[in-house]
Amino acid sequence: MTAVLDALARALRDLFSLRVLWVVVWPMLAALLLWLVLGVTFWGTFSGWIEQGLDAIGIQVWLADLEPRWIANGIQALLHLMLFVPLVMLTALVITALFGMSALIRLVAERDYPALVRENGGSLVGSVWNALVAIGLFIALWLITLPLWLIGIGVIVPFAAAAYLNQRLFRYDAIAEHASADEMTALFRQERGGWWGLGILTGLLQFVPLLNLLGPVIAALAFIHFGLARLNQRRSGSA
Image: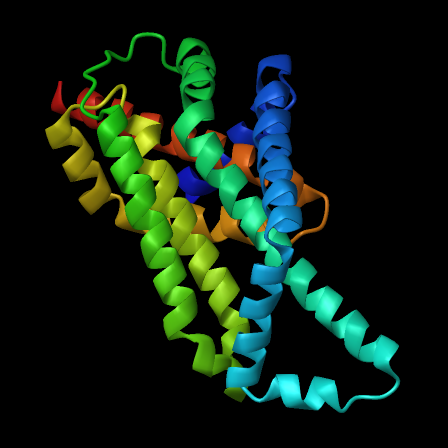
């Protein structure tokens, strides 16, 4: 747990570097712009999907009979927003993982691990595939656990889903440039508790207002620090 907290502390330290602040801004802006365009273009389609989902769980009928109408319209608008915000956050996470990690890895490696040899055990194809698997399982987790919302247990779903997504999405890219393929496999297996611990902590940031805007980059930096520290320790032990 000490290694996890140390990685998170180092991530917060690096957050205020000018090189990092740019990576904070552009993925979030890109995700926001993307979903604004999609939302405006396909508003009718998205609204229809939401209504179908509400109808499937019996809420749409209740909203249709609710008076005054502005309350029902307000609830529907809130549901749209509750869907829009996670989509923006998820997209920003993926953009950061696929396109922002290289700059962050250079920053961390040059400052803290300049002697760590790059073995390039990962690849762009591997990174994209890892992201697709992470997103696919993330969506499946949400869909499978939807009935749990009816009995109140569903409140834990967002936290569990965020923890899974972060640890699966960022651990690969964090060490892909420096570790060999065998080292990556070993670190994923041997450091499973650390990856999940970091996933839980960084996942919680996504539910803190304002701080969640920095969540993707904090998560990326924390996983890079944790992964490179574990890799460096492994190689030092082997030596």
